[in-house]
Image (cartoon, rainbow, N blue to C red; front, side):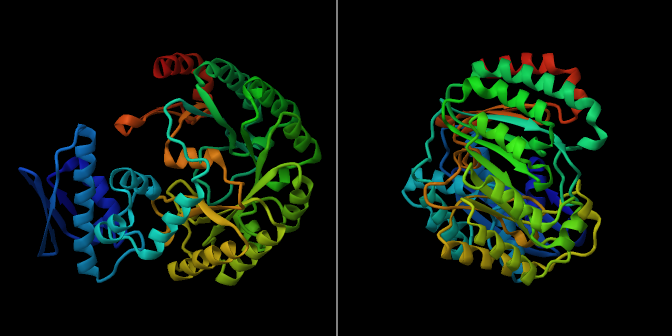
Length: 456
């Protein structure tokens, strides 16, 4: 049970508790006081009392004051739980999905972030070093500018639904009657949304599996984007190898796509079958070879898939490295409530996953892949992270801009989220479209009206 005076922070406190246990297994009471320039958080856990004070200079913006109160409340709860459970977490009291964003704020204010991470937020030296490497990798393309814009298009269809997936996607085999109408509405939104682009930095067509569309509809969507493509980075998530063909690769190339994702997740056939992916590992390599040389290629792997040992993951990673793609992203399995695997009992132990993540960082850096972006999620095994690695000069602009939230996003499609950044205020506004395809289709005109208000 959790009882706090700051009711608006109850979910944030729960995030910290979930690092150690569940709310059902603990009796935690939180009391808060604020006098002059000092805040005091008093945590009572199963009868034991822990109090922590922090000095707080009143900031210029109220939103910053609230953010600092939340930070020190979570930190106090974390410290108390560390004492109760006699253990620490690799990311310390940080539960947010963008540790590097926090590091950048500290750099701007103090010129360094390591002391704050290690000594204040209790982040391990290893994870602090990872953040430093990522910031170094981003130097050539990191640019905070209110005028910069990334253009995002969402295709919500997949050839089948993977069992770890909790995204808002639809099996195209059972939703084919909506495909043409969706493409029509999407093109309408793309054409209307071009007016909101300021300085275009990247184009990203994601999903789902965009190449799950037939060639005619894929060509229609990309044709709608042609007029804004000025030679910026242009990515399409080809994704599933069972939908990649010579024909749709040619369509991508003809429309100026410069980067694609081919996502094996694993090179073990037995795991692919468990996940519900309708292809073999050999097909991954076959389709990779079709695309190699035409595009820069990113490949995704997941550490901690059901039934996979460290040796299974090592095999997949070593195989991926041998193919020599420009980018490799290593995800830690995140079992969300919306995925099939959330109901499964067969999970890889966290220590095994930690071993996988540790091996991936060492192996990838050995072959000249450097970490360049990272994000974390709730329900992530071992309280770990997802990390993208790239060869020199192959860092993905869209990934950096999105993860560091330093650029506006004009987003089109069901479940697409447009974003405006107000960098001088350290503030972001978001506008989300309906997640459901049928709702998106019925409200497309309303979506365009809302977007006009949002961007103007």
